[in-house]
Amino acid sequence: MEFFKSNTRIDFMVLRKWAALLSVGFVLASLITLFVNGLTWGLQFTGGTEVHISFSQPADISEIRTELQAAGFNTNNLVVQNYGTSKSVLVRIGGGQNMEQKSLGNQVVSAIKGSTLESVSYIGPEVGKELATTGALALFVAVLGTAIYIALRFEYRLALSAAISLLHDPIIILGVFSFFHMEFDLISLAAVLTIIGYSLNDTIVVFDRMRENFRKVRNATASEIVNLSVNQTLSRTIMTSGLTLIAVLALFFFGGPTLHGFATALWIGIVIGTYSSIYVAGALAVTLGLTRDDLLPKARVVDDRP
Image 1: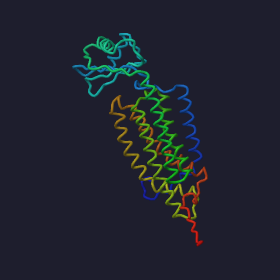
Image 2: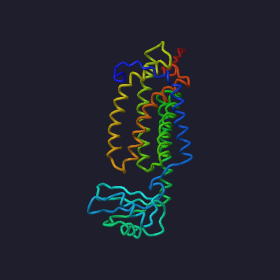
Image 3: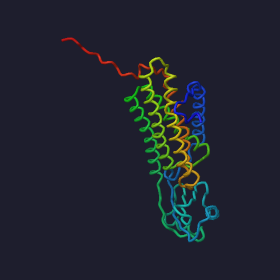
Image 4: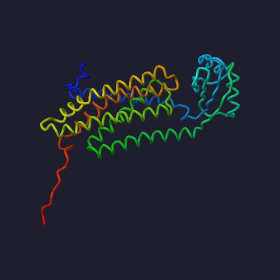
């Protein structure tokens, strides 16, 4: 169990060129699929109607979908899922509607046998566009704020490599959502923002150890310092990521359709974020020319003139 030894000596930097090719490949593939397929936006972004219905017995989701399709509803703009309990169902109908909310809710109830209308809510396309804009702004501010923080605390090369690392993770997550045509909603966006913070935490731990080792080890190259720092924090990274991943996988398999997108973004982000904190953030800083002098405290110039 090499990963769980207190003093591992794995040479991560020897594979940094292959890791760079792998990262570039994943990012390019993600950008291509985003350009070709786009994202399957959730109801919060596209606008539409949510109809909450209930049953006296556990509901059959596939049968409900069949009944709605037979009643003339477009299944491409339709999402049917359990809502809280097996007897409660949420029907999401995408796009603008030409009929009143109550009328649409009654039409849904009429198409589904044994159902009772609980509530109907409508989200306009203007609200959806505003949410999409706000979400993109949140991602931008998160990355920019992180870069400024690291530049002030460490050094600009580390800030640049951390910012690229933080962009690397959400791009790949969005690429997976686009490739598999998975619905991307506000919950998924929250997961992406969570992963940015999670990945940043791992990156800061490695950077902090790098600064400490640059001051302690005087005759080592930048690559050797990055290797040493990653190995010293490896057991902590593996344990933290592994335990978090177990909890997220439990959500993925048992959380139901409502949390599926959230859990998917999280588990992909944990794996990619752990990888990027080693091979993207650390290795990129070395490639950008990080040296020991860049992280040593600047000597103060004392003016002895009277």
